[in-house]
Length: 246
Image (cartoon, rainbow, N blue to C red; front, top):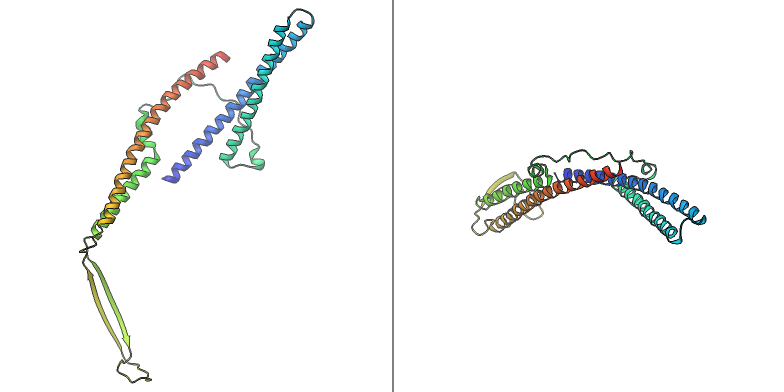
């Protein structure tokens, strides 16, 4: 379950990095168009200033706007490089495999945000971390029960041995003789060591694991509510920006 959780987490981080890289390239393309517009405006203002139709202040304002746009483009170019490298690290690609192109711009946001109903319940059911903690609780409960039984059941040991030779034979003789077999049984009654310490330790670990389980469940529910609010807010802003751009 832990391995499955790591795989899901890695897949999520790769998807998020992919969308960040797509968004960075799209922002850069849009900023480049804005820079081209500022460059055209600056050139036109320079021409009008040379003809005496624009004063120095207007020319300086257009020059400053163009330079600010150049700074924005430079920052976005660095952002594109950073997001692409992050994606490559998560994918584990290098060499020719790293020289890939992203598939076009991001699609426009949908008309309505797709949020599942009863998102908290869905998040609790889908949490692999909660599943792993549940299995750990069951394992600790079984171990505590087995240890408690071992502390009550006597320890029984069986012994079977064989002996050949004659212990009364004179020194230097072969001493060989018929085989003689024997056996025994030993019963250890747990009067003093009844595994109380191990049982107490396991029960304490069981209680701690159960409290962590509850804490994780609270975090999952809280994260689900936060995600729902974040999705609604982001979707509204995305729709607003899309309408402005269109």
